[in-house]
Length: 258
Length: 258
Image 1 (cartoon, rainbow over the protein chains, first blue to last red):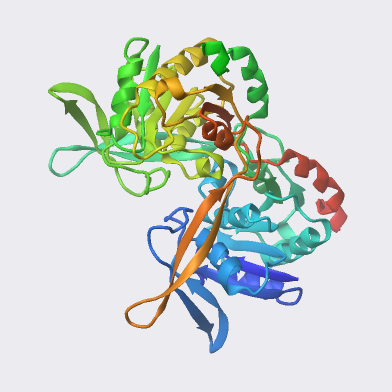
Image 2 (spheres, rainbow over the protein chains, first blue to last red):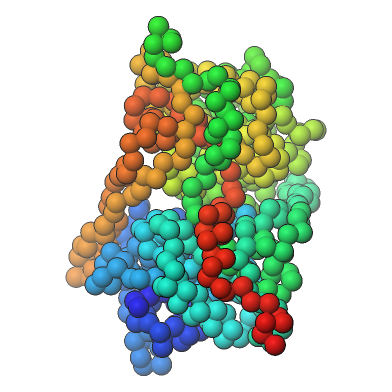
């Protein structure tokens, strides 16, 4: 199996090192990852500027290719220019911090896996739920197991797996659940403050609020110490409303206008 | 009807002025829009920095509130701090340039409308298909018609309308279609170049390729001179794969591990 590995925390991060180590005995791994941490940069594709690619050696051994770009750039560059043939699987992570609910729209980790899915290659995004994680070994085992499962069962074109692993020792993990994206949302408010010159400014504060109790949703699963595995895609069409809007009587044809 | 209007091209743009003009006779309009063009900045929410709000006067008359932030920030600020009560509808646009297919994931215009949908307020994102558009009057009429339709029929919580209007005179528009997000994708390649110092760099080039012919998809509809109206939501769960993965045998419970 040929696996392309990337992330959004950058090629120097502990999470990507653990992922590569876990996959090395089941696959030929190629690492193409951002040269710098990209979590705050978002998940765009670089079109206005050129990209450069550097070989990164770790403790004297070649580790992978560092790209001056976003996670999605890395996947595109890896598949188009660096790998000789298309990979069987792309895995993005292991991310430091969870990617659940509406946050998966913003996630650089997920965007890299999405880029692969758009290019019709199966993909997995994997995150550990805390920014303070130092032990990625269990998440690495989960990545390895799921890589084998995806290899065995396949995924539909355009679909990827979004995986969140609780930041707990393996013996405290209750199990693994296939989940849906939860509807948890940010409850937030702008705090009004006065600057030293007497002018107003506003600072956003808030927390994520769960509005459902279903165990088979990403947010509830990780809270209950389960690994959450969510199949996601990027067809945002609301098919029910698509059908319901037939009664809105807004579809006009040229001959009706005449 | 109370309508909050925003955009991603900035409060000074011609598109937002045309939108406000079209809506003024059916609604009480409040404008809260980015102080600067935000298309390239992406669609995040500003948490690491404070926001400031300025009153913007146009030709001596108060036009709206300018926020030093993203389109999503504007919606949040408008709903939480500026408007006395929740609006009946949020409209984002009129954007200079189309937002179709996978591009709706990246769009600042759509992200503003999405922010409203997350906050359970019906929303519309509206774009004209060319960056060179100067006449937004027909798109303004479409926005007004759809605002009235949404007011009449409602939208499910979490659903918004993504509207694309061909850049054509009104008499060349064939009609209006309710559509699905198209599967059109970018076919791209990195062009390798050598810099003046003999080092390699790579530049992304590519074009959008349509891979379907269905008229009721956003990309095909606008190409055929129809206004495209796509109901979208942000539940990315792939429900079919969710069901299919039951046979993967990865769901393990604590007692099975024991």
